Image (tube, rainbow, N blue to C red; front, side):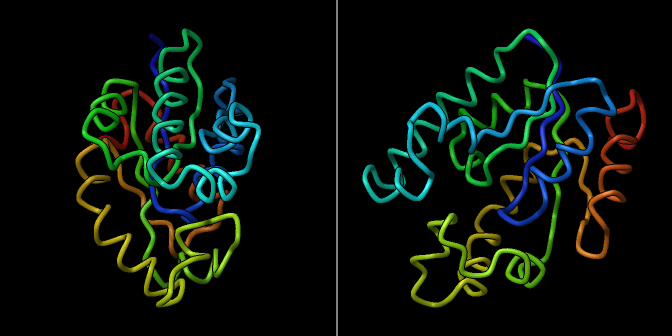
Amino acid sequence: MAEHLLLVGMMGAGKSTVARLVAPRLGRLHVDTDEEVEREAGASVGEIFSTRGEAGFRAQEARVLDRVLAGEVPAVISVGGGAVLEARQRDALRQGGTVVWLRARPETLARRVGRNARRPLLATAADGPAAALTRIDSERQPLYEEVADVVIDVDDLTPDAVAERVLAAASPGEGRR
């Protein structure tokens, strides 16, 4: 199994955007687990949630993450925000390479994603996206903390500045907790 660079964090933290900036600079492929789930399922994340429920989506997400982590070629992987919910997935992430948590305040996340139909946990939230993000963030923070080798606060940074910090963290011996 290759030593991957894994970006974790809440929806809207910038995982996919930053991974797309970092991957070519490291000479690696970028893999987005949500995009892989959609490709394998032949349906959008929202469609999967509506037809199979969150449990069905999480099962597909787990299969994709297992496959991606088993790859022999090191990649920069933007990991779906909820992949940390299962203990087995957290173990797989910790063993898969360097895990960088892109941490953002809920108000930053709400500003970035709003009530986006591609994000089913927000699109169906009766209390609105900001309250849902606050609730989800408080549930997931300890899980991100558990898997993270490096934490980068992204609220006041541009994607390029976050990418620079991720690259520094990916360098052996630099930026690690």
